[in-house]
Length: 597
Image 1 (cartoon, one colour):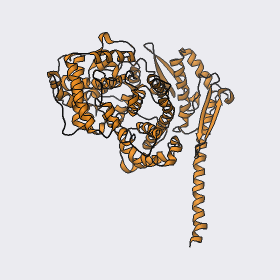
Image 2 (cartoon, one colour):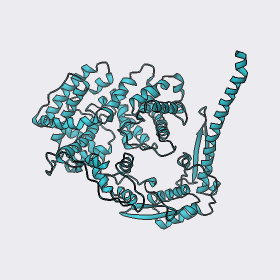
Image 3 (cartoon, rainbow, N blue to C red):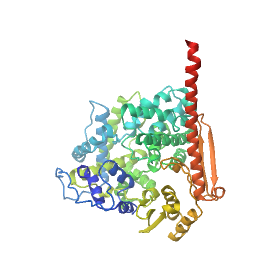
Image 4 (cartoon, helix red, strand yellow):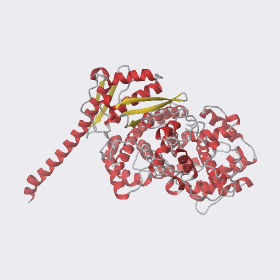
């Protein structure tokens, strides 16, 4: 499969050919690597890579498909520069006019912009339609952003806060059809808004609705823009995916509930509001910089008069390489400072290419305001002050420019990508235990190699000593984190491992695929290491459970104790539901039916 894929996919899969999984995983932790865990999982999932059994020969490297010769193959690719960036922005403006205003077009000014136009079309074409990847110059005209303007922010049935929360609900998956057919009918009911998060609880109405939608339509449940492989908590793939969406939505609703009063607070400045909301998003489980960027952009579009992101915004990893390329000497190391510096350069530039861009922008925005006169959300963004590009627009277009440069590298120069635009800042990404744990059948142990200071530290946990593979994995993960974050030496981690296992007798445990393994995890950084978890019943009442290492007799006693409580709590809930249904059935058949007859 990889031999027939895009050149960038083929190249990275070729680099994995004949290597062990451990070697591939270890290479990901090295600073500067362009291959990540998400890439490996997708390559395996999509059939680009096959994982062979130990001792099996990988054989010769598959021959790639015949590709049309690149017109400039062998020639050096010219470096990115501000002149080219302005020409690219002109092309973006023309393309959004053609896509969103049928029958309308604008003439590109300048020979460079005109020559670039075929490259712009070649870049945008594969990112339209179902891929939903292209972001126009005016962010509000993006597929997902325009949908929110048309289907959420203009909806008369909801008040301001409900629209705000609905925006976050949609963003958990970004599938328009799913939102309209599976979620909107429930969200239009008054009782939904009494406790939105409750509807997304496991086994709740929203989960059932999404599962039913998937069963009937077979349509995807996540936009292809997301590269999310959900953690395994349920055996069935579809149920597992839906559970990950509903769980993420609950987290996003919590963020929305926290963010809304901040947005409405008149005592804070716009910068203070966005900084606080961004920090909250990034501190939420499963979210990060990219989510913070996406959600703050949504908030900015929902409240255009506030101009939240006019002067400053979060900078995603995709914008970092072009920032470095376009700024003198690479610019400041801090990404926000670098964005500020480039923003000043762009808005103060008075060169010919800058003038051509601003003239084109003025013409396009006049067309857009006429086309979308009934949508204030679009008109507000299509009203840029001359030489006043907002920070958020620059940030988003830098990401698009980076992808454009990769497209040029592939199509014109026969390269896998533009190496100057690679996201190389991997040194800040912490290695995750689950990416490194390996079960070794020969030694009956769970092992890992922790990348540290350019070396790899070998570590293992005996399954026999742990009484089960799952317990061995938990012990290995805790030792991994201790060495990664706490700086513990291998000998100290081994001592900790032995402390965990000493006196552990094993016993009854939850199934290996139970979500309790993810929900019940001990916090070793707490002064009194504890495991906490809360159960939500059908009425929405939350019942907290907690135990400590001291109370349970050890870390391995604390986690399984709550895991069993969680498992049997869920089992009890199912039993109660079944009993109630049976009682209602019997009551109807033997008591009500004779009376009706």
